[in-house]
Image (cartoon, rainbow, N blue to C red):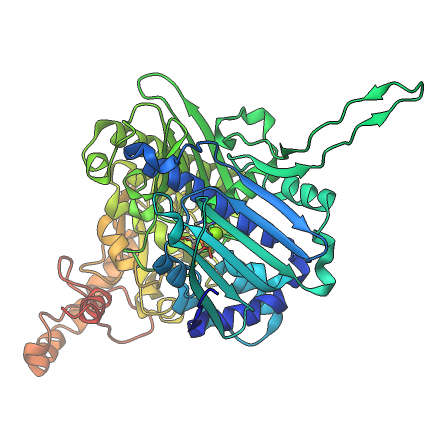
Amino acid sequence: AVQHETHGFQTEVKQLLQLMIHSLYSNKEIFLRELISNAADAADKLRFNALSNDALYENDGHLRVRLSFDKDAGTLTISDNGIGMTKDEVITHLGTIAKSGTAEFFSKLSGDQAKDSQLIGQFGVGFYSAFIVADKVTVRTRKAGEAASEGVEWISEGEGEFAVATIEKATRGTDIILHLRDDEKEFLDDWRLKSIVTKYSDHISIPVETWKEEVPESEGEDGEKIEAVPGEWQTINKATALWSRDKSEISEDEYKEFYKHISHDFGDPLSWSHNKVEGKNEYTSLLYIPAKAPFDLWNRDQAHGLKLYVQRVFIMDDAEQFMPVYLRFVKGLLDSNDLPLNVSREILQDNKVTQAMRQACTKKVLQMLERIAKNDAEKYQGFWSEFGNVLKEGPAEDFANKEKVAGLLRFASTNEDSSAQTVSLADYIERMKEGQDKIYYVTADSYEAAKNSPHLEIFKKKGIEVLLMSDRIDEWLMSHLTEFNEKSFQSITRGALDLGDLEDEESKKAQEEAEQEVAGLTDRIKEALGDKVKDVKFSHRLTDSPACVVADEFGMTTQMKKLMEAAGQ
Ligand code: ADP
Ligand code: MG
């Protein structure tokens, strides 16, 4: 008999299983999508590895996933002939959550089922979703290239632990056997399975097959013999790479389901752009903007980038060379006809083809955003609240597209009585006062602080709009954004405030007189403060407050100082 060893699930897995079973129940059929998605990934990985080692196909190059069921046993089996897993891989992949953002995810859980189910949806459940419908799952797998004796069996009831054993498995790949719960027997039905596959997995590029029973020999009406039709595996999905199909033939739902497959996201994307490019470089790109930020968005080192294919063959995940870091939320794929099949990350690093595709993809994403901003302000606002702060990294990183990115930025401003960032630079410029040639802004620790800054007094009095910035990244952004639409930016807390043509003659004169009245006062204050300040100057920027602290035109602002301190500098 096979000897199983028992392992405990990682605590997070236990928690996830609990949560998932309860909160995803209303959407339970997605388990099949997840398992088929994994099978397709396994086929992709095998094909990639076989590029350098053809023997991995073991004379079976027809990669597919098969669905079969046994009504008597109450089991549904999802069987692939993809890459398979070693014992170590089984233990880590099916016993822990390696996903990035896991800690953030768990820290956000509230115990409120409705809210948490939303979060799980965003986090994604993958393989573990099998337990929504099964009270026991058996996985039998064997890695491509390993001996038949190196098979692995994994069994779990989805509670605290799982058992693993080494077994004989003649065929390469993975069988997932779901022992369905008593009230889930509806999945032991050909039509039900076909309709789920059509709904969620039609776009999968390998065939999804079900067994068509043989038709026994029979006798026709006039007694002639009708020959038996042998049973066979039948493909029930389209089984072509979605991105290689014609745009006009792909439905919105197909695009959405394909997004879920490649992004491992549960939610629908916000928008997408599908392009076939011919000419000097030939490639297809399919780029998606997610609707929700992932849990690891703030980790700049986290895996991101596009899925790379060369002539339909999967090459790698997270090819980050094709997207700038400030667009790291973009998901999607590239299928190149120009890159060699043996392309590596190193080759991509310094490659003309890569650069051209990166530029083009960056442009596509910015265009997509511009289009949303123009056509659907509310939708754009949704995007902005999820990813705005990432986009703000753009002007520092992408010199060539600085102006375009700046056009996509949104700020709070004195024009609105709200902390919501809704004002574009174009809006601001449209509202500029006669004679105003600068875009004024103030940065502070919070919206409240910015809104109540004493520096704003003179602007309020003159009715000049000021952008109110209070995100941590804003200082950094503004140190790289010097102008937009030929209008330069001016911090209202820095250096001498020159309102230029906005200053009328009368008030200039009044200012000079006022300055003479208190002559000598500034010197006395300077003496009293000593080294604590660089200078004490007479200012016209205040109308109600008696004094305020101002940063030097070229020195660091107080905000920037705090940022540097926080970074340990
Ligand atoms: P994800 O697909 O997002 O990585 P899953 O929970 O769906 O997460 O799967 C976890 C991991 O288990 C996969 O990344 C893969 O390494 C492994 N795995 C799951 N199913 C299969 C399979 N059918 N063949 C090979 N590996 C698999
Ligand atoms: Mg998966």
